[in-house]
Length: 155
Image 1 (tube, rainbow, N blue to C red):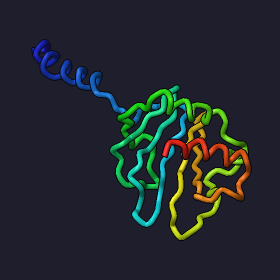
Image 2 (image 1 turned 90 degrees about the vertical axis):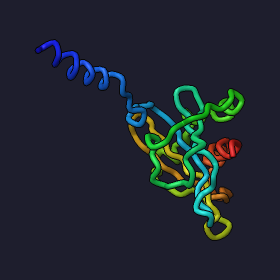
Image 3 (image 1 turned 180 degrees about the horizontal axis):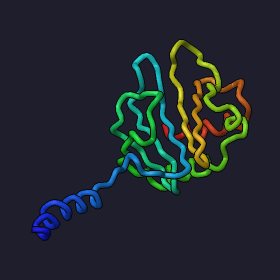
Image 4 (image 1 turned 180 degrees about the vertical axis):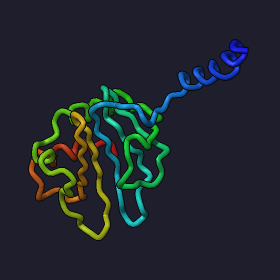
């Protein structure tokens, strides 16, 4: 009787527990997540980009953008070529101090009503950051302008 319980109940349960992986719960370490946001259309259809672990990936299936979107709610289904990665590979290590000291800041101004911008989310040593970059960065510091200009090359 014990063998039947072991074979038909416990072993399938153990197999199920060991074979299931929760991709959304996975820890990815330090990362940058960025995407185009806003505009009157409710969000562009551009992908979310993830820069992490020496790779640049895109989630091309995310649809409309939500500002509360978390990296764990996305499915990065496409790895970008090395040339694209090389364009932004240094960003994770070169976030300007001005940005790190101003979490949740909206940088720049919009030249018109609801023109959209770029949202950047970061996780660095377990600390989360979020910044929004409006289209007009003329009043921003050179370091911030350089940072967002490199990201804009992808769009």
